[in-house]
Length: 299
Image (cartoon, rainbow, N blue to C red; front, side):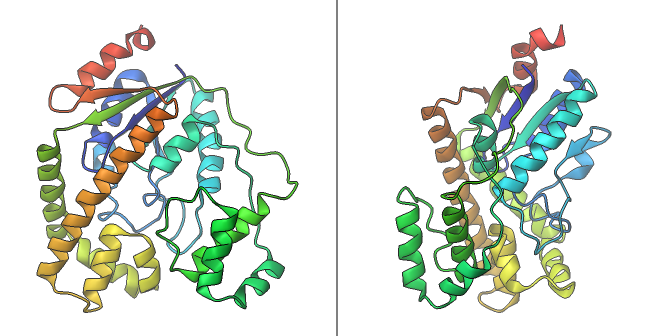
């Protein structure tokens, strides 16, 4: 094993498990969270930096809100940090809940960097939204995530990437020779729901709304906050008067529960595609169980 992976749905305790594993296995944590890369997205993204203590962590607070940070950027940063951690004689521990990031690492996606194509963008500017959607679907017939099909800029970028991948390009990401061991945290459905709801109340009590207000006051647009999804999207909409604070809790709580289900669906899909996940009973002692399964590394 030269890579330990810890995954699970939101509010499952991934950070705590990763920190404990790092302390016992001489590890450094590499975050696999698409929002924690952004500076200032602290409470809503659940960075919980105090829990790390002296444990080294990476890919948190590395770009400003509004900057593009794609899957390619993540993989590029992961491979760079992975090599650095290994060079120090430490064990890289990839921990997070962004399924696409985890899957890219574990199945070695063949990614290439696609630069902006100004000529293509000029062509796309003349098309109606429906025509853009149709073009993307022709390029990506396997497309299953239609979340971004109403956002013109993101549609344009998706088409740009899909068109770029058809062209002869420089060699893709040079992956290290990974030998991962993957652990997932599993809770009973009702207990996970309780954890999600309790954590949301705590975040609201500890300044999550004020965090959104501060980000917007610092120049982060409502559109960008909406792009970050979940906590940032719903709080931003509440601040714009789209619904009340009471509705905010109810709507956001429901959305996070749905998100957790989608994460679990993604992890099951990873398993069907060949990723071996050892599921830990989070209600027992997952730290003990993980360390027992990694006894060969400890020895």
